Length: 621
Image 1 (cartoon, rainbow, N blue to C red):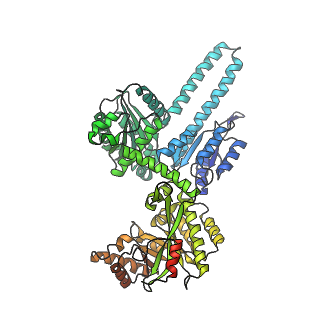
Image 2: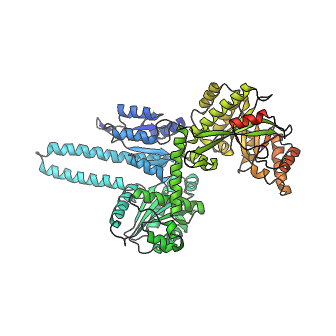
Image 3: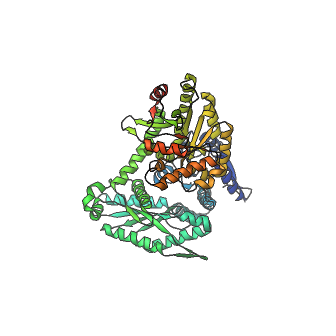
């Protein structure tokens, strides 16, 4: 923030996000608090705008089409005009590897989606204060140089002011503004010092505990962020009562804390501490007029193999960690162990081991391989026939992606699709699937292999539906392929429908206007199918194979399938049974009036050439 005519000018903030809704929400919140806001919808615009008129602060989204936030930040830091502009990253990802990368390319802080505007404003204000202090120091230095020969006493006074400003700046830069605890930067400095100290001292041991408060979001959502902030301060105080003077408690952001346990002789000391921390947190917090209960999932990492051997000698060889030299790595592994504790059941601790490390490395390698696979055309589509159960004839196919890795061989979709969803790669992968399926269907239509046009079903993810230009991309593919849109069926799961029902409804209506068919996949496996089904313009319900596989085991299983089929008929929606594997299942489904089916009883998913041969043989079941 600069001084003009004796008044403080509004801070100039540049928002970078390719989602217009995020830009609108952040612009409204920041403008209402007196900030001047500019926005850019992609990385190139952000770089041009920042270089033309450097802002006081940049809020930068990580996941953007084209140039992502990391690349944008690197470009800005490489330019002397924008190198000193603080960058706060915005991301829906909450993996420590993303945070590590954000800080390594020059980010000063991060904010996770969905936004808590109180936290956004606090972090923006904190970084602007730091920037203002830096500017003040620069101005003060200039004044000192100009007046050094004139006023010795004034110079001494200003030197003291400078020292105090430096101390204030250092404190702000290394401490959390809410809890006053050390922040991530100070934690990493101390962790680096501990690693260096232990390099030549085999007897020196320490541990890192990574804590994440379970269900903390519920407190913010139900009681407000003011109560949530008070709870964080209370949690920090209570955790500190369990520690020794040489230990470090730090707040990493949000409801995440880390503890450096310095100078340990036995692993059991740390295990006892983890128990003590959870016992302390199990006691209710009395804030304002509320009694709040909270607990934490804790991940534990040791710096020496001997501590793992002490805890479990039988599997010590398998649980030995890597030799840590980088503080980011040890914090990453503690975070990984914390997520494992959360998966086990929350409110407990988990000790990092080699299996967790290999799993984290494998997922990282998988993400890298996925990016390469898309660039090098390693994906193929297989097509599973969909059968009219009454006529016994093929009426269409479901397009299913397959990946044959050049070194690892076949990788199951159940393994790489979740990774693609998490990283956002599902968007370009999904576009490739839709494009390829459309062109294949157009080829079969033009070849007139069947008397009636075939139907092609294609799966779409939540991430694809959330893209700003989703409909535009659909239109572009339809235009390029020239396929009959009425023969395309878009399959979605209930998660697409329930996350943002109003915005999704408008998208579905637009898709129906384009003559596209809609199918609800895995119906009955979620928690709210019946509550929303009547609201959305579905053409087909897909009965999950978990129901079909048990159709003959007990009368109630048959009744469940019968109820789903009856529900579909009452709503004017056709049904498709997935995973048909036996003639017995087929007979039951035909008797119940299920219109369509697919499964290994008819055919496995086939490459395009094999699927075409099957069509030409004109099978009938």
